[in-house]
Length: 177
Image (tube, rainbow, N blue to C red; front, side, top):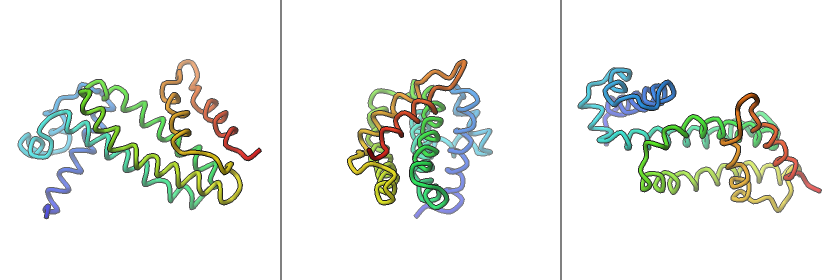
């Protein structure tokens, strides 16, 4: 069993790394430790490599995004929840894109394998809610939706972010005929 102070240190390190990597994706491990208020030994005990830390930040972000689905569905219609959730995913993927350069091909594969299932499950929950209320066509497939929206985080953001418009087109295709 992990002690509560060890869990708190790990959570502080991941939070500090997320913020630090947003500021500068080349932030050093020592800078992350300082920002988290822990010693280098504590950092390296939790994350022996920079890649392990980057993977933890990715995983934490995916858990946060996936965990948002029930709250979104509790306060808005399924199609609106899907739109807001997808734009949040796009934003997260854009922020993480620079970090991906720091990962080896094996780490890329690992993170893809770890996150694909939970992300598809979240999309499934959103689509199923829309299918139940009739706002989403019955043949909408979560894998197809993920593949279609994959290009959104690469959509140009200058001078205008094209992702919301492109997502609106995709969502229009989900509506029943």
